[in-house]
Image (cartoon, rainbow, N blue to C red; front, top):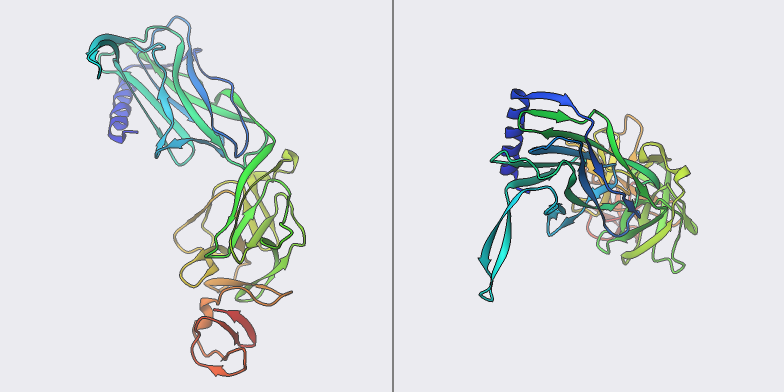
Length: 381
């Protein structure tokens, strides 16, 4: 993507829009059939012009992809490409190759560029500096490779299209809310479940049920209670349920690729579900409320830190804690009442007059790495 070139394209098209008439057209921009599996391999669709008798010279097309269907990147670049030769005019020249042979080379007279923004909108633009017409009223325009998030809801998902089609003397637009196709989303989801050996803790929400490893290498917890400085966790015995937010714990780290069948009827409204004081999101979510706490490691091990003035963007498949108004803790540790506290020491414990003892009952003045009793509570620091 060349940002400067795209800006130039937009400026030229906007000038055209101001000078020429902008009328509605029955010509269509159509998307080929697309089927995807959540978390599966990439797929592609072609975007084509389906016209009548009008020869266009340029276009500006916006595709609004459903959340969870993302343009694939390769080597840091979106996989979007101009379809050739299709309806783009070109000239043929001869060039010498590495073997010394002269071969025909097609030079296309239209420039093509694209951009993907944070709202999952793909903008594609093509124009000719010579204002040349396309060679046909219909034909393929460009190809887009996409990947489906493991959390994409099974069933059908719409791709909306907004387009301006430019002729030599006017701009025509497709009616608002035009939908070109429905993406068919499969019911089998595949995703990577991982807890780093460094942090030993993480969060997740799954779109399907998952049986925990029998060897105890991964444990899951829910949270239905809390104190002024800690989330109180309840251990899950055998299975993680679909669409349920969890805190994960793995002393040595855990990594696995898991799959399961997704029940679309149980998909939570808006892709967000709250249970107790944990909230899981199946879509990317921006957190702004001061009652939201996100698990982070800011140098003292993993804690749930309160979201401050700067919004925090949480990835799909993750969870955060949401506490009632009035909570003043900057960070919350987490406790397992069944086996003792395993959370990291809360920053709040560093200030004020604290009664700190080591496991032998000896009073200490300063917390170092190890297990302590702070104000009658066991903490790991």
